[in-house]
Amino acid sequence: MDFKTFYNEVVTDHNMHPLHKHAIENPDFEMEGVNPSCGDEITLQLKVKDGVITEGGFVGDGCAISQASADIMIDMVIGKKTEEALHLADLFIRMIKSEASPEEIDELQEAGALADISHMPARVKCAVLGWHTLDEMIGKKD
Amino acid sequence: MTDQELKDNVIKYRKLFPLLSQDIAYLDNAATTQKPVAVLDAMKAYYEEDNANPFRGVYDLSERATERYEEARAKTAAFINASTPEEIVFVRNATEALNLLAYSWCEDNISEGDEIVVSVMEHHSDFLPWKYMAEKKNAKLVKLEPDETGAVTDEALDKCLSDKTKLVAITQVSNVLGRVNDIKHIAEKVHAAGALISVDGAQSVPHMKVDVRDMDADFLSFSGHKMYGPMGIGALYAKKKHLEKLRPFMYGGEMIATVHWDRVTYAEIPHKFEAGTVNVGGAVGLSAAIDFINEVGWDIMEKQEEKLTLKAVNGIKEINGIRLIGSDRPEDHKGIVTFMVDDVHPHDVADIMGRAGVCVRAGHHCAQPLMDHLGVKSTCRASFAFYNTEEEVDKFLTELSKVRGLMGYGF
Image (cartoon, rainbow over the protein chains, first blue to last red):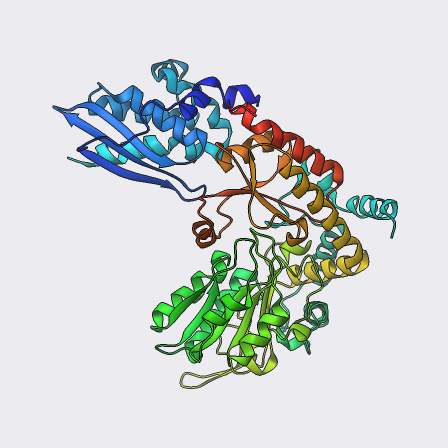
């Protein structure tokens, strides 16, 4: 696979200049996600009001794929209902498993930039770390 | 040996490794080495000509399988200069050897308040079994810390040793720092303190002459797959006097003398520690690997690995934004060069280099306590075997110098 399709600008940009890599105050949800094989770790935080995600952030340390993916995810889910966020997480995880249709990948907008990771088994866990954590965190409560 | 002779020899022996015909620079030899055709052929021949369950059958074929297995044991013993073959227990790998030792030895030799000294640079396999047993026995695990270059100083060691010390567990070569520990000297001090020494030889036995009697190690563990042998075979060396007193680790077939409902006697050493059908094919492969190492000789192996390490360490120092882990001096790295790239996570470095055909390892290298000690989360590592070439090191350095740029950072 070509280098450019994998470490593309979307990924390197979000890695170098993350929009949401910071702690937020009084989060309603907080969960740590760890990828033990690589040591990637993130702590994901969200504020939710009336079922809508109003604020989000993460702190952590890991490879560009894990950090960029988490940043893109938070950017996408802010302003969305938790069910919509869970739906996106489901789509993303299916995209990485090569199970999503082109239309579904379109729905993932910027996160679609990570689609090629599905061909790179060693990096799959990095890409889904944030999304899995989100899924566990808000999918579990209630 | 002239430089040209060394080069010719490396090319000659490298050709005997089928996998190395692929267009990649395989620089992850501390994780596992490739296998020469002699090892593969020996294993094939065993399964095609001599395979049967050893020890059990009285027919000729089973006896041949037993012979192959015991020949391998004798060869392994001679390779590390053990006194007798029965001091070698075959296991799956160094991890199993260390678990066997920690479980069985601590069970009878460690009591509340005793101390086990473990260096902070140990691989998890030489840390977790001791930690588990120390906790189980209410004993204390004492941390031996190397200096910033990876050296174990007398001062640091003396601080750890006391009249409560029962055992010191230390690696002969750190799988991250590449530093060689002077086991002979350390063993002298450990013995003077009335304790035993267990040496992790996973990274030393494949790359240098290891003589258990000369360095007076009580125990030595190593893996076959890191020394050109197959995966799934390794060895625990123990002085006979210790092995005779050690309780079994796994129970089952082949490790017994007699079994009745109310009384059991165990087999003699080393069979007492080899429950179940043993890995004869693996032992035969390890035996062939030892023959291969002896054929090439330490002179060629060590000279080539030193040359590659020197080139890599010096090359890394010239690239901006790369930080070497451990000593600055190439001679302190036994074929292992660990580094970090500023701003770029080690997994991205290894991934980018992997795409360019350079195989390096990224992560904590199963040595998280050492990572904590060094204040890093994870690192990249290039590790050499004698079959690597200077051209491969050049390729490694060229690709490494591109990484920061590819990730959007300045040079």
